Image (cartoon, rainbow, N blue to C red; front, side, top):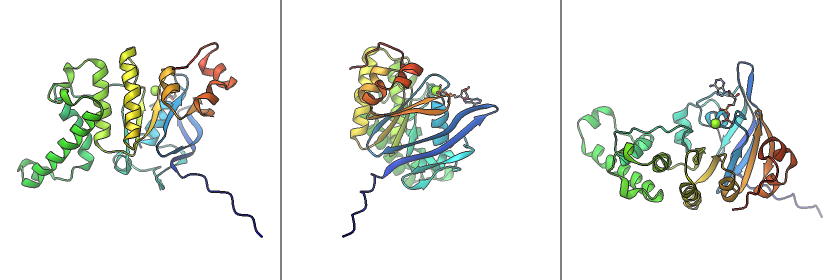
Length: 267
Ligand SMILES: Nc1ncnc2c1ncn2[C@@H]1O[C@H](COP(=O)(O)OP(=O)(O)O)[C@@H](O)[C@H]1O
Ligand SMILES: [Mg+2]
């Protein structure tokens, strides 16, 4: 009797293999590999300059890595331009705030749906019925994203009038309005106070519960360790460790390179 083959590992939504990106003499990504299963909150941590933002920019097509592979939902993304990658279902927020302060909150979020918009400029200028219908859809999707971010009551306010913590939420809502399957958040807790950070943690959990896989770059360790299922630790463009929050906190290399000694991350 022949033995059964071992069960296949669960399919990864995102599988990054051997990713390399250099700037002049700096290897910002020196052969990075990792896999993210669908439905996870997966964090990427590491000291400043470790290559976290470069990784996001490579995943989104803003940079063209010189080697490696980025498979997302069984498609190769390497070499695709940013708008094609976004259309495949990857959304992101930026480390620095990118809002139109004079526009209303809901208009800022509607900007995120432009990928789904099909109307030509001429049709839009003539205000044809199809365009009005489409705008109604975009507004509905944007309001849905604002509800998830608990910002629906702010929809009509100018984005520039919101406190900083809520502005950062508008960016998350904008990324969600494009209905991504994978959402990349680059340092969403930067500049937030403790209450806002706790609310962010709940929001990230709600986003996952809504069916979106989350890739999170963040320095706030209680948030990262409390909300993530798995973590990738980058150091000088290489993977230092990968595992559950408990694995990572117990890894002496990570503690030495990044976490420092005698710190508790229980939340
Ligand atoms: N556009 C760029 N041009 C030149 N060097 C860059 C660029 N982006 C990042 N780097 C360099 O790549 C390394 C990784 O940077 P980055 O990905 O921003 O790190 P992190 O987000 O982990 O702090 C750093 O040494 C940084 O100076
Ligand atoms: Mg960064």
